[in-house]
Image (cartoon, rainbow, N blue to C red; front, side, top):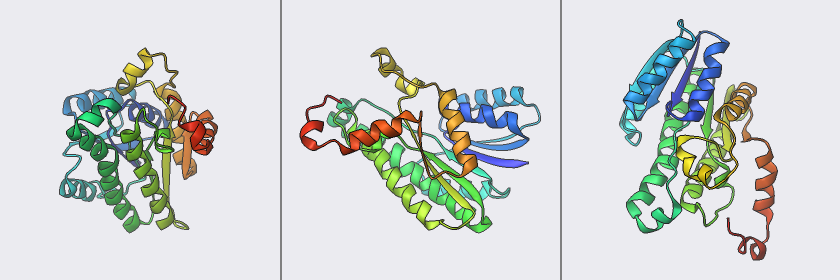
Amino acid sequence: MRHIVVIGATSAIAQACMAIWVKQELTQFTLIARNADHLARITQDLSIKNPDTNIDCHHLDFLDPEAIHSFADRASTLPIDIALIAHGYLPEQEDCETDLTLCKKTIEINALSPALFAEALAQVMEKQRSGKLAVIGSVAGDRGRKSNYVYGASKAFIASYLSGLTHRFANTSIKVTLIKPGPVETPMTLRYKAKGLAMASPEEVAKDIVTAIEKGKAVIYTPGKWHLVMLIIQHLPNFIFNKLNI
């Protein structure tokens, strides 16, 4: 039986990943979320998909280092095969510019919290000398843009952090994967869908994520077209980039 830990298990992308994993083989899930009621519904759904699935649920403060460390210790009683860190927060950029509390929350949830969980889980995997650790970042972290630079900056932090973590575990059995989705149709992005922005489905993105983790890829863009799109955006000269309304 493999052991999969999911942080932010109530996210649409995380749910789509678990829907794939639960059908592949017998799995022990350890799920963590901020919303206990929503997590209970997800647990019930997984049990329906595969009644033999074992599920352990936790509800904790995502910014409490001691709680996160204690959780990682408890989870490590069974070797961790895969850990997916999937939580995030996407407010309006304009609101972050006028509300410093919201700005702080955005950075904490998207940057500080995933890093704390990743560090705690990395310690576990280092001790067991194996494991696959994946974190959902965003294409928004590739270049700061006026439309979402607070959110983007937090995702850029995650990209740099995971680059270092990948370097730390180079030439070991521990694999680190940074996932960079483009816009995905989730409850967090409904307002953008209403504006006509094309979005991928969580199921489409989840297939890419599960495959990338299985293969131990260091970085993936999903859908794949976003690799080329962001490569172009990254290399636009400032005199052109600054004229774009993006």
